[in-house]
Length: 40
Image (cartoon, rainbow, N blue to C red; front, side, top):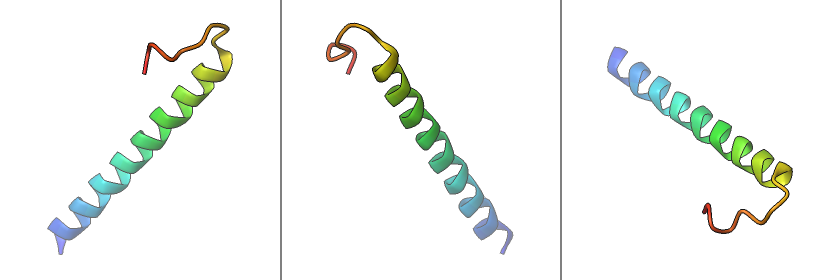
């Protein structure tokens, strides 16, 4: 039971971190004046 909670908790943490990186990358793409195609 505890291992299932730990696995789901780490999965939720990973999803939130992934979403945070996605939002940060999207914001940087909008803010950056030059095309950021070479960064990807």
